[in-house]
Image (cartoon, rainbow, N blue to C red):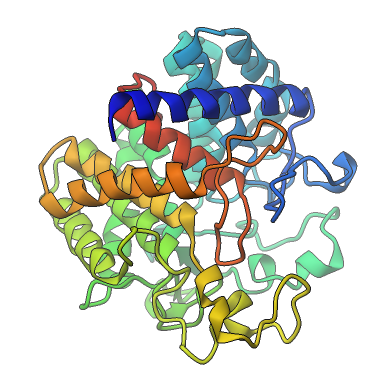
Length: 411
């Protein structure tokens, strides 16, 4: 895309990021994905706070606000981010046991990014502390970072009955998931920032375990892998976000390509470069002409609708109608993948990746980007259920920022 078109889209995204920051105010929460893009419609006290163990998305809003502050020069947005310090501090200093591996998303897009923009040393210290807490989720005998649940397997009293039955608690022992490839950049950053090799060693160990167990010979990726919780020995694939065990969740591949590309930048280890190429090339063979993938590449053709036919009824469209396969796309996966490819392309050229980035940037901004300032959401048709999510919105904004030369990219 021409720079003028990128700027037009980015300006619109920055306006929306600023508007959303003022709506959030002093009470950041886990704002859920919504089909109408109205993240702030639910009652605020019904949503998970930053301190909640299962909270992982508020920092996508702070990340967007910080990108907007850099681009527009409106540093009231940076001051807004800094004003949210207390709940972020409390999470890792007061209740570090009530955390999960998504501390990487939470603090990279909050304190690390704020530190890069403003030089605020308090934010630097907060990210280092978050990296310490994340590193203590490392399971030495299995050489992986446990994804979910408290490390002592207790469940906080505030967890409701429904969530207690979720895989997040019920099946979390010995479990690592592909998303963690985008959490370990916090460890790489901390290792470089502090000079403490411990952080880097943990990140490399987890990346190597992912490399050996999550990537299949054909270049597809499993969502999760379970290790024996006692011996640490690899046990079996697991699935929570894709179609099934053995399937190929598109966003999982995007997390992996981006994560291995970041690992390659920090370490220079060619095995991470090679993994990123293998996964990206497999992904490219699966995508349609416009670059937006189906939610799961192995979605059966006889189960084309909402969450691959697992739901017998869905009020928004007929789940039994095969025509609804067109609704199963995931624009968030496309945005994340394009960012990951740009990370790779910063070190080495690759014609297929370059073509994909160019094509999908145009597709997302022209066909899927909502610039209406009355709608909080930015990128529609995410997650295979025609929704908006804050993480997809953030990565679309990062995709534009990367191409316009932002200096505060967080990973």
